[in-house]
Image (cartoon, rainbow, N blue to C red):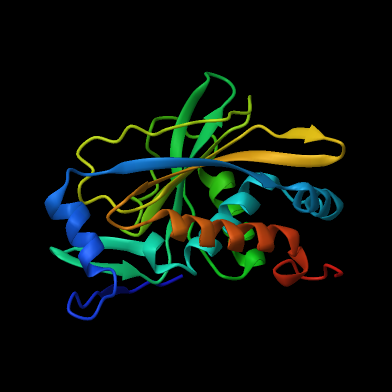
Length: 224
């Protein structure tokens, strides 16, 4: 999916004063928020359709990000702006030697297209080892998204260094827990306060949870 970079007009941008405060007045502030999301409906639907959870997780988070400018922000050629969408950049785990390799998959608004892109990437690169694959470097609009499936967690925080101009969010999910038939997934979101406030995370999480609860909107042939 082609993406364009749009420059922000600091004279008319409502959040300009907040941005200047977090970039010029105080030191770089990176923070993480940890939540639990309900994946009960999502997992049941994917099971009935024979679909994998991880690529669906990549799709849903990337889709939610694309609806909120704050999570699309970046600096290009010393200019502040935002992308049309982001590209998920994620690690794959090799069971044979317990190492990881980073891979990226081109995003598409159509879930079926994105899912096929992911499967194609895994077939071509999934067995290749080394921290980075032979696939070309990820595009500039990439963001890191990962999963630690072996355990759940209540708190996870990313410690970023030299991240003053790094505005891409980082997402990390964990193992599922089930209580009385309700399946929950921990999710850690790490952001730069210059780009994202707590309210923006709340809005993204509302979008993400709603989409997880309504697969009929994005999975073809799913009944309401």
